[in-house]
Each structure stands twice: as C-alpha cells, then as structure tokens.
Length: 172
Image 1 (tube, rainbow, N blue to C red):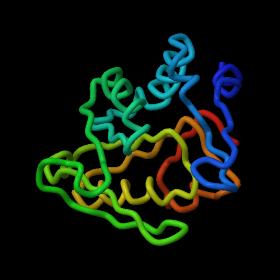
Image 2: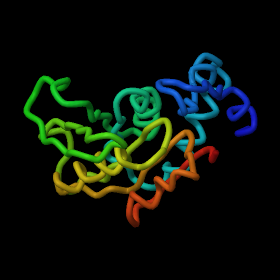
Image 3: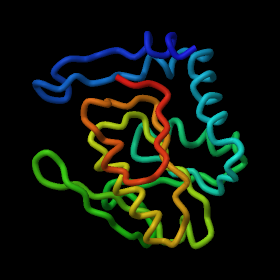
Image 4: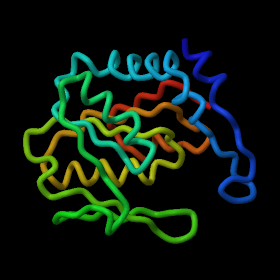
C-alpha cells in the first residue's frame, strides 16, 4: 500500500529555493483511493491510544489532522504562524536555517489531561513539530506523539523531538 503512496509523491527540485528538493504531496491528495489509505493508516496507528485532540500544523498538516480526528472521535485544533489565529494565543519560537520561526495555539484549544497527537505532512529538521510539542506541554496536556506522511530521515528530525513517539508512514 505505501509503495503506491510513495509513487505518487513528486520531487520538485529547487523549490522553494535552489538546492531544496520539495516533496509534493498533492498527487496523493487528489487520488481518493490513495488519500483514504493514507488516512486509514494514520488512524490504524493511533486507534487504541485514546486520543482527545489532534493538532494539525499549518498548513498541510491540517489536511491530514482533520480526518484523523474525525475517525478517532477526537477534537481537532490547529497551530499557525503568528497573527493568523483570532483568539488569545500562546507562542513558541523555533530555529530555522536562517533565523527563527514561531507557531501559535489558542490558549483554550487544549488543556491539562488532554491526550494530544500532533500531525504534519513531512518531518524534516523537526523544528516546527518540536515547537508544536512544546505548545502542548506548556498547556499541561499529554503529548502522545507525532505522525507524519513522510520523514526525511537524513535530516534527523526525529532526534529533535525528544522521547516522544514518532510515526511516519514513509521514510526518504
């Protein structure tokens, strides 16, 4: 099954800048059978874990996190870049190759006792996912783990996520 998913992920050289090989997941999303299999694989991994909330990381993480939350009977919430959420937020800063980035979460999106899964499309360096995990911890919730469609293992992003469970459907 994952061979068909892997075959649909398209490499786009020099995007968004020279030297980067972008993993384009849009062919996976556009095929209803493949998209369903991906969501079912995510859900199968977390089904017995009593997930209360699924967090999608802006922006492609939203695509996977919402149907996963629905299938698990969990709530869905999002982390976004600064200034994109309309309510009171907490912010977590993380390092980028050149500078820093930040993510925000509504202060009432998760709380103590919530069992939280963080979802994104691709795990690269781990900076963005790690920031989302720190937001979960700051709210007193329990981070069950992270799930990704694909992991770029040569960038060692999983190491940046500490001892949390890291689940990737594909590894490149």
